[in-house]
Length: 103
Image (cartoon, rainbow, N blue to C red; front, side, top):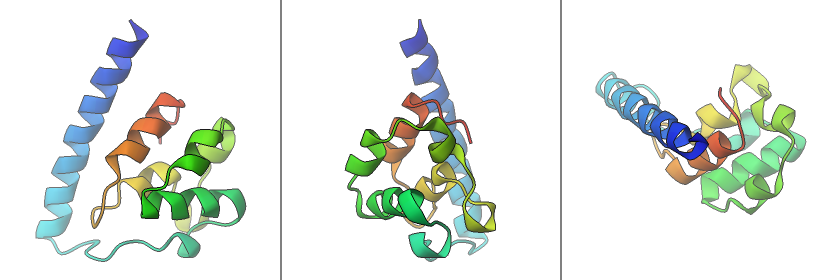
């Protein structure tokens, strides 16, 4: 039951991200990848750099929901960093959702 709910949530999130991506690209918004160091510090920076490089070991090893959900600089979360339109990392989004991150 929970797996089905997670799959539906993930599918809805992917649909929303693809719509957002198309809109943002059409408006020439977010055409450059975000830089992790501009938004995060400490362990969040390590995780964000891994997301940018598609190395999700630090993300998978972190179970602190508060750390994974917390806003970094400029109010950006790891979820939104992973969904960056210039290079969305869908696997990172999936891992974040599985860990309970919802923003």
